[in-house]
Image 1 (cartoon, rainbow, N blue to C red):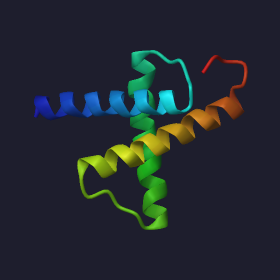
Image 2 (cartoon, rainbow, N blue to C red):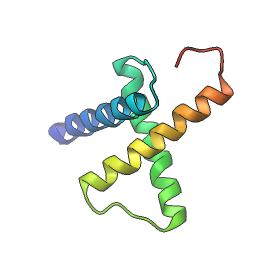
Image 3 (cartoon, one colour):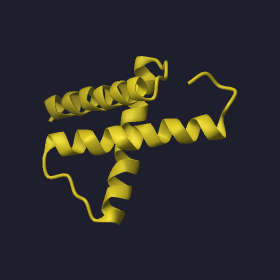
Image 4 (cartoon, rainbow, N blue to C red):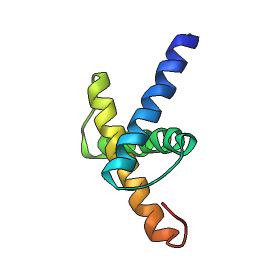
Length: 84
């Protein structure tokens, strides 16, 4: 059980890191984990609305990265004075 949580946190950090590189954002490791978590939730929600489901780990990572990119984009619009 603990192993899977470690894997999940590592995947969240990976998706947040990839999204921050795609969007050219400079965030800390903690923010990358949060970004990956929130991005995964938002990405999964939006993918579910469209009718897309991730059946494997790679699909989940792609959806999380897209969701995290969306979160960075929205943060830039809502909070323009904060360094992203």
